[in-house]
Image (cartoon, rainbow, N blue to C red; front, top):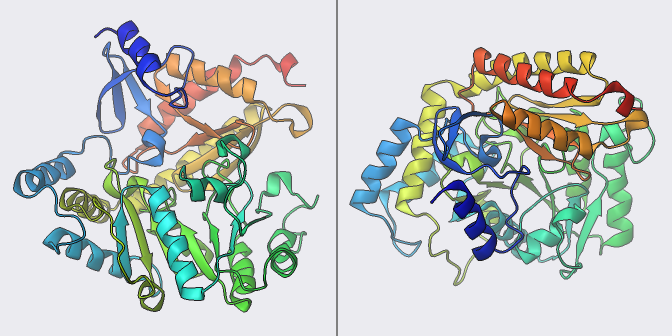
Length: 431
């Protein structure tokens, strides 16, 4: 099929929510390393990593070979039968995750992992109320859509009771009109009143991403999680940490994002980069919490030996190639270059993030969101062979999440392309 026929069939046979970037949709054909190629052979530097999903580069030879070998040996077992891959993966996760996390349950996606985490918390605490953060994104199932506090992704009205949304630590647009560090962490302390006034006083759990990805790479201050988790604990609630986008070394220095904030989750969920692109959902809990999930509960494809093998191969690649350290080093270099762009281009209101999950909030005068600028920047960067992401409630945050294998040369190339794209926005339109 040619490009036109592919797009026509995409519109005809897929539901309209399966949206695409760009005025002229990009039809990808293959990928290798830090690059992808369209059906006409044009090469693009992937600085979005799928959607924060490619950890070790597209179609990595070692991961692909090990995954294919397992596919030839045993492709499916479900959770009804133990296997070497699922047991080996569960043991490895118990070793590398922070704190006392030990008991795992495997599914197919981040949404399912969050569903499992909430179920675990509710069973363990015998409570059903969940506290989430505004601007957070949890998934596309009915429950996770209701946990999501981002109107663009809530396609129906609120249908799941007991979910309360606290203010997040969005310092660039502080809901309390203050500036960090002279804010006394009002956003975190407000959770106490939220619990006392909008819940039974005994919430099951507080769920949060260390860095809100879809929300616009919103990165809390270093004291935030200790404050908010301590409040939740006083009311006997659990902490569910959503590492779907921040896990597997993406934040640099640590394997998981929450480790930068010095708190230990009771439950953690993971997906995306865990298998370098293969579908997976992981929920891991402390023994006492994990043991609360009894009875008839399974996942047909959870713990699939092929996917488990892909995850183990991805973890091995991250460890042996020192990609966590590379994410730290290249993340610092990337951040310096993005800050350089900010000094040059007034439409960049803030650069934020950690390691290789970085964001630039694009604005007009007085911090007015500028999604129209982002749309223009997207078209320009695509034309020049660079793929980036976007997010934020207003669609005005550029998301930069390249594979952990990225090097200085690729960063220089990406920044130069973005620089040229920013230059195309006339100064007269920014005020």
